[in-house]
Image (cartoon, rainbow, N blue to C red; front, side, top):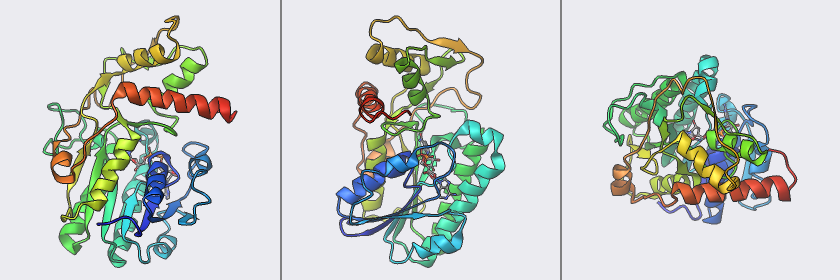
Amino acid sequence: MKLDGSKILVTGGAGFIGSHLTERLLGMGASVTVYDRFDDFYAGKERNLAGVAEHPQFRLVKGDILDAEKLDSVMDGVDVVFHEAGQAGIGFSVKHPRQVNLVNVDGTLNVLSLARRHKVRRVVNASSSSIFGQPEYLPIDEAHPTNPTSPYGVSKLAAEQYGRAFYRVYGTDVVSLRYFSVYGPRGRPDQVIDKFTKSLMAGKSPIIQGDGSHTRDFTYVTDIVAANLAAAQCDEGLGGEVFNIGFGSRASVLELAEKLIRIIRPDGKISPTYVGEGPAEFPHTQASNRKAGEMLHWEPKVGLDEGLKMFVDWFNMSTTVKGEAR
Ligand SMILES: NC(=O)c1ccc[n+]([C@@H]2O[C@H](COP(=O)([O-])OP(=O)(O)OC[C@H]3O[C@@H](n4cnc5c(N)ncnc54)[C@H](O)[C@@H]3O)[C@@H](O)[C@H]2O)c1
């Protein structure tokens, strides 16, 4: 499917990933409507869209995916929906499971129902590696059992399953991409790379929960955007398919802190501080991205060292040049 000249809806397009996707789609010649409620999970989302606000093919609609009537009003003639709106944050979900369920499950159900009614050609749904829970083996492929250990993981799995059911029952072409630990410019402030960078920039120790031995498959945001575009453009029917989208390697949180220390404080005078227990959810993640390579012809390009340098450069620019506190 050609995206140039197509009509796109990005739910959650004011967020971290959605705003990068929006920029890229506009650059490709698509018309993009962002539908976002600017939730108060973290502040500053207006800035995420500053670079595209004046673009002639960009439209911003402030709205909630739980408001089916309003969502209905932006679906007419849409070719592809990228469904990025969601309540992220595993920790947040432990405190607010109902709110997370409402947005991630009921909200997704609204998106799917309206996409069906409006005969949208494809929905690309943002899912998560959290659906897997404790890994039984690494790297995690699509056949790995799904045993989410947090309300967030349960909600993302339910949303993904609704996508599969919509394909089976109604023929709606829904494909889910399970992102693994996404980072990059405009990253969410609750994420570990953002937190470590902020501490180091302020001359403070990065604080590691537990002993830092838990590992994550950190994936740069432009690779996530590229996977979304590949999923939308693929001419083969992808209805009901799920793909693991991660760089395919893993680094421990301690290694991550050490890499950032080398970039930001190369004099080595700062070292990490350890507090409490490690994360309760799962000790390790690592994606097998083979299926995405074979079916979507997607492969990640940005390794962790390169990605961290680009992230720190952006962080420096957004705090010093613009004088904005993050
Ligand atoms: N960042 C990651 O590492 C990661 C990993 C796996 C999956 N995901 C998923 O990717 C998607 C995007 O994540 P992100 O990191 O960009 O998060 P984000 O919080 O930056 O973006 C989510 C956006 O959705 C909007 N939103 C939330 N609830 C809404 C509602 N009810 N109606 C309309 N808009 C609403 C928010 O205002 C926000 O702009 C989410 O679905 C998330 O669960 C993210």
